Image (tube, rainbow, N blue to C red; front, side, top):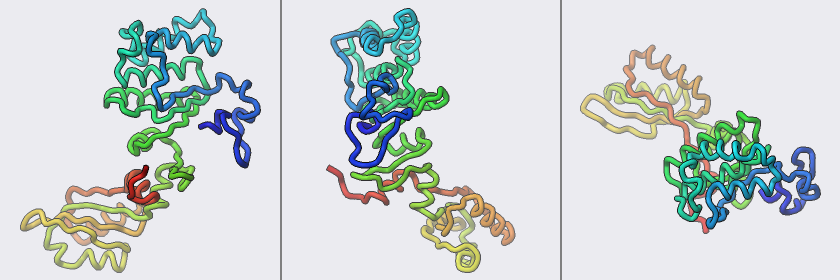
Length: 276
């Protein structure tokens, strides 16, 4: 983030933002970025509206359209009823929403979000997520850091996994998942007699490489199986497996194909030990 915004000089390589060097030409990129810092960097002795007005003056915004723009942003953040209250009286979620609309007030091209939902309630997190997802549709680039894996899965088109250095990426989530976990797991319920017949062992040995990793007896007649296959091609796996079970007359219930989550990927790449 500091490299992109020109706060530090690269040790090697070249960074270009809008075809300019952000370190050498920072003044030409003034207003190009909108930043939501990890800290709630607001003036708590001012009201929500006054915080936005002060920010607008720093960026030299047109005063003729300012009132209408601020009204619109406060409505988006659902803060219109609290706009004249001191920010010191706001909840954590309200402060986060105010930070987000403040960063967008001057209509930046690149929006930088440093853990934008840190410590907020579920309702505020959803509202912030919904708004972030709209930004690319308005032609904006969103650069976001997060420690919440489900947040990255929901919001990211492409991601980089960092652990003191880049350990994976940039890439799309599915690409990274398939690279780190080139396997797929299916879970299904079937007749226990089928399991005892050895038909699945023959399938896994001769036709679809894999192994049974879990057998959970549900009743005298049914068992819940998990099978891991040596493929990340879910479509091909599904078609082959269903074709096989139909051909053999095997009744399948509660069929699910499981993929590793982004959290699974992160833990595998970084290890399970605690971090300072």
